[in-house]
Image (tube, rainbow, N blue to C red; front, top):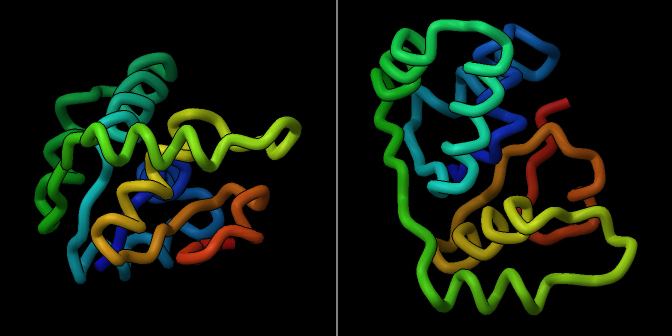
Length: 121
């Protein structure tokens, strides 16, 4: 199962390097944790783009926005390490991937040491 981090979806939306990798993965479907979805919406809107159009394009794939559970929240807390560079949203995405036994697609190089991570570039 593919789990999409906000950086991966934004690479696709903005036609950045790695966006084609994400497009191919989106064809297979997957999930995006709700905090990552919120970050995509925020950044698209902040850039002045049409969120409704982007939302529709993303949801045209078999992409489900999944809630974060209490167990995910606690697992994200366990992943915290001073100086590791992983935000709460990052750790929640990793926790959801662990719960769903999925692979996380991300553009964030700081995740490279984490299990389940597929860097898109």
